[in-house]
Length: 426
Image (cartoon, rainbow, N blue to C red; front, side, top):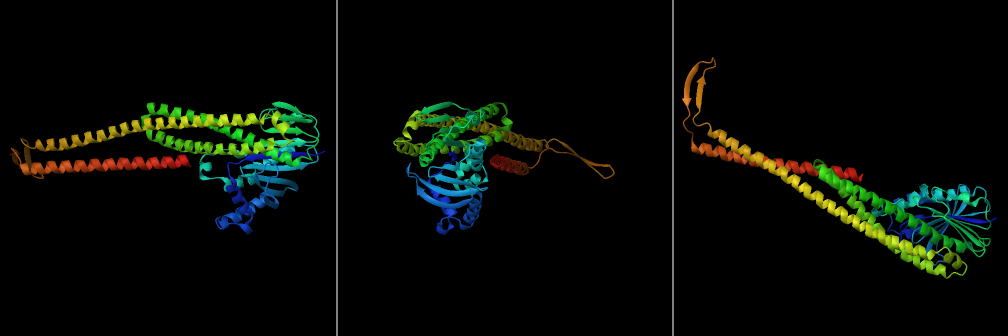
């Protein structure tokens, strides 16, 4: 009995990132462009977690793509690990027993989603990827190729996560298909081991790429709902306008980041199209590719990609219109506040001057400490210069107080806005 158990995921990287990983793991040839202290620490962690025994940077003989080939030993079990230049990450386990086959499949999948794979994100992740988070490590797929069909093979498929969708027969080869698990029964698997590894790289890319598109679709639907809620709140809760605006700014940043990731993904389909054309001309693999309708996979992914791009562009436009609505309501609210301040200022100055004017015609009484009346004075008029000075002082003080209040209000709004944005980002 012989079998290949291949688990894989896909990172949104290029050969530049792959070479960076290679240099990180090979300090003896490390370029001075990389931070030596950071790389040294990461190198030790990765070597330990991946159990690296040997490593080469080579060209795949089947699909003609560069990849990093690692021979590893993890928990006394030998694996072959391959990182391809377009981001596909494979963990390959050659097995001679079909006992606990499901457990063997899960072990490889768990290795990808383990700390080892997460450590790789420190090499692969850009700032845009950090902002536009996609759970690539959860989007894993498995290809299992066995020389004999095990009993109860259908039980290997998870009914909830990845139910069996189709069974295809090609000459003496039998293929069991689901979204995240494909099992191929071929008595000549050992002879065509390298062919199946190259084929698995393509199949795993399709599966994980489709999962990422699905995740982006779900995220876009969630953002539609969030934007609708914010637009409704603008009309009903103008007091919370600053919080609404800050939430919208945070959403807009993420929308732009996700759209950037989506646009970047188009290039990966182009590179995989080249790989597909090479494998399609491979005599042994061609019948399987045709029967599995891999060509339709490309069409579906390209169509899904374009529809999602259109959807995200609409979403960003919708967000911009919501931002414009909020800006308009905010300006109206701010203008109302300033108008109120102006009214208070005018009333205050007028009251001061009017109260000064009431001094004329008033009666002034002078008394001792004991309350004995000394004199009674009737105020007939007062000095016009004093009246003018008082009026000017009242006017100037009113203006000063008005502008101070305006600066204070603007500063408070700005500080509160920054605090809310920091809170949203964290």
